[in-house]
Amino acid sequence: MSQNNRPKCHVHGDELKKGIAKSLMGYPVDEILQMDTNFPFNGIYELQGCLPRLDRPDAVKKRYCPSCKKLANEYIKSHMNKRELEG
Image 1 (cartoon, rainbow, N blue to C red):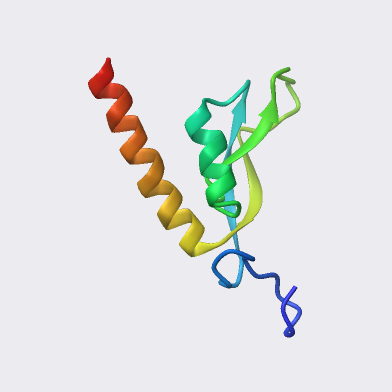
Image 2: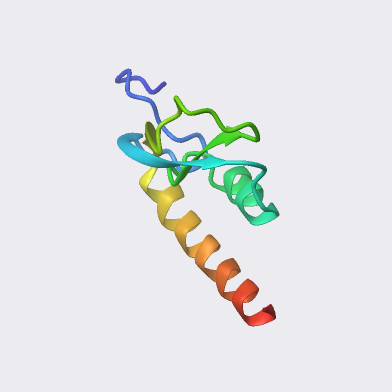
């Protein structure tokens, strides 16, 4: 936490904001794991594990760093485009 008691991203120093992340069931592809490593507060997905449960929502509240989210979206779009081209 920062001096003003608001949590900050340890990568970018941005104040974390509240948002909604999509629940992701199952084992994620390597690009998602790498995205989470590089941009830990991206707030795009919440990994829910491999065993689906009926009581898990499709989306969850989560704090995110605006810089992590922006860079993670760019990262994942570039990798999705590569996958589409590789077919």
